[in-house]
Length: 281
Ligand SMILES: N[C@@H](CCC[C@H](N)C(=O)O)C(=O)O
Image 1 (tube, rainbow, N blue to C red):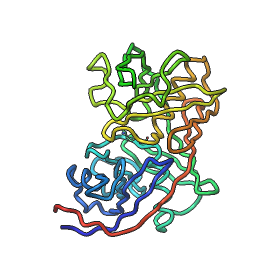
Image 2 (tube, helix red, strand yellow):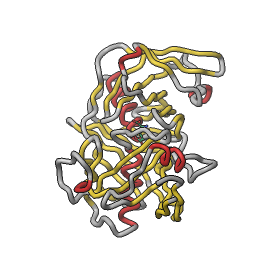
Image 3 (cartoon, rainbow, N blue to C red):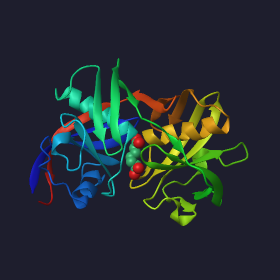
Image 4 (tube, rainbow, N blue to C red):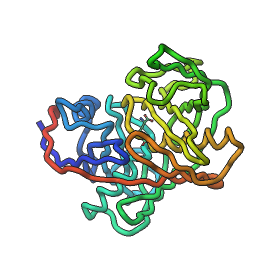
């Protein structure tokens, strides 16, 4: 057993176990991540955020002084980016005195993400370019009245998303049974799996969204998913730039599409600190 300090935090109820590992000495296996995220046998979370100095990360080519966010999904898989995670990660490192200032960069597998600290424990993260991919994708999901299929838009926010824009004749968001993983066609379009967002427009530049995340199941929020949802919705109404509000089951975030980049603004909270006994190692 290994004893390690941890914190538990969330951003719009997308929740994470946070581990600080400056020199990258914590060799965290998929089994340990699954255990940490287990809501009964472990601490519980949608994923793990491990903070490592970029200089200690193999293959990192950029500024070694940055903090690297090693994000893992609850099933132990590695993902490129986590939009809510960046805010919670920054919030924790600031609280621990490991970061300072109102603007700094965080290194992720999808590249460097600039962060601005706003008042009231809110953070504005530059999410980089959003790519709406060409090609037809169909998503099938369970509803209270059986399975339904919809056309979806493939969007790359550093990690892969398939966005379903629901129309007035479609089932309500609440009737989707997202504890069952949606399927997609063609099967080979997302070789590494995909996060699937279901979105309804509820006003001008105002969306409601539910998500089934790759590697975590249904979560109460997905930051990269909200950016993907806005990119797909904006394209459907011929808009390129602008600020949108996205309501998710765990709260509300703001997404801004700008020339060649995007921004995600929302809250972050740390709710517990403790010592975890990692079962292996
Ligand atoms: N919840 C995150 C996304 C986490 C990674 C995702 N499940 C994937 O595998 O790509 C967010 O807030 O963006």
